[in-house]
Length: 117
Length: 111
Image (cartoon, rainbow over all chains, first blue to last red):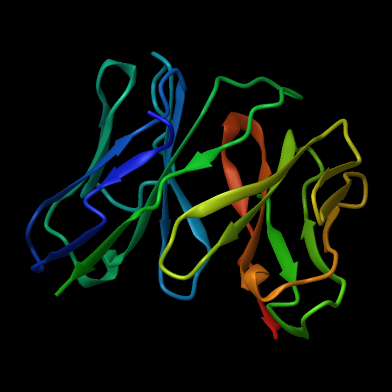
């Protein structure tokens, strides 16, 4: 597609429920990232996928968070047993594979605003 | 651990003024630096990307500079307009392609 598409744009869920957030990256982009932006805070790295390599999961805040990327394209971020502190905007970005000093930037989606009540 | 700081946190200027937003980072081993714009309730829009081997990039009324050795970047906005009102985020690309973001500068341009 022309841009990074995320769905849903807004999600309200009850505490304890599981949620799935979807990201559809730009066609041909091999790298995909998830970030979280909590109210009044900066963007926090969650997870990074690059091609067929093992993902960098070092930013996931707890084992309730998981993500997968099927067929090197669409990615799903799953949060199990949601807590109120999970409320945030979840942003996905994609980029072409990059090496040092390459010229590939990052394109972000519009995000999913998650509210846990 | 890379840390990115943006100063000021908020800035309010009259329309037409030229302004400078500052970004500093603690680890100079970066691949690139990117400036983004974020409007309320929206995602991030990329403004400028500077590679580690470059010193500046320009797009329209925007000019971004990079001094890797001193760990600093500036975003210069010429002839500011009310439509420039947004939060401006600086992010550095480091090993593993991870971006480390500053907390942003909230800019208000008053008509």
